[in-house]
Image (cartoon, rainbow over all chains, first blue to last red; front, side, top):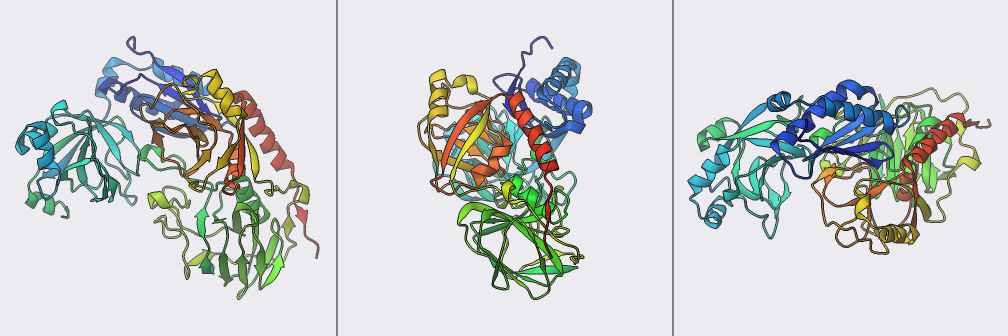
Length: 231
Length: 317
């Protein structure tokens, strides 16, 4: 692709990192996913692991079976194979139900007040956008989704909570996420999602992967409970 | 199936196999033995495959009661090992029988010991690995990431221990008593954001291991290093990556590191040296020296050749 200026750097003795650009975007997210898929096919047997992130891909290979020249060549060739039309198709669309309310999202009212919007407007805006999974990390199954509409972007809490319940739907700056497990956290909580984001007993253990698209769909309390949600 | 019962778990005892690979995409880290070399020798002495599950004992204090007829070996940190109150050597196999009491005292040199058993501990893997990562609540005896606890039972097989055992030749055993290491570094990642002067400072300074070092990262104290950037878009972190946060004090990221992060990184420590760092006690001295990625690959290949050509010694009758 002509608008792409990717670069490859050494990360360590067995790792190269591919930088697609210096800020995340929809196009880059889908390119990252395409290169992941391509490398699994072309050099899968020497790969130890891959870490896709916002605008980069860390490629970890077995240095006793390959070297950085050969892996770099495979990365270049995966980049050459990127196409615009494929980029647009890339990534499954996953719909996540959310029970938005004061009881399930203790920061919903405060976020609305801070943004000069009504609670209903915040919910509508959060639901309107289609998000990309930019990265997965921080904790098993924690997917960073972007980008949140500027009108409802909100900074992290000054004092993080000790316990954020599992399934909490949250906003920090222009990112949103669903907490995959109970954990400490400083994001603004606006609702609860009854769908498990990480279950080690399931295959796949996550409903999304990096590069996928996500939409949120508002449900009421009854539907939330019927889907197995807990308050 | 036989077993070993945990009488005392010690400070921190974690089942580890060679690590969890292929799950970074869902945010899972590698885990696995911090000192890969000591782990390797524990398994090899027991005649195990390289990936077999052993127990990583940090600082010491693990006490086990055997219900099995088998063979074990302890390698790594110099922890006094006794079987039925009789002091016995590290770096060699010992036959054990039902009723035997196996005790590991506290490390006199080094920090991590590896206790392997013939056939390995029979622990159910999760995401293709038994490695215990407490921070992620993944792996270990009950797949929940919890460290070993008193009264738990470690399943194993009874094995034929009638043949002569093995020991690692004396001259191949590491010496941890200096509490000082030179870590070889492959420059990479945001190295261009560190000026020539900052790099010279880094490679000519002495650093000390701080108390807040753990399986996730070794936090060092010494000369401040200042990159020209504060942070980056979060990106994948490989084993040994040297992260420099705003306070300028480097952190070497270890087996339980977070999979992505946004601090500038100078490069990564050679995997062969990670185990040496993990054996340091707080206050231990660290220096760095730069090598090329080609040198790193040569060193890895030479090490592979070297360990494949070391012959274990047969124990005398």
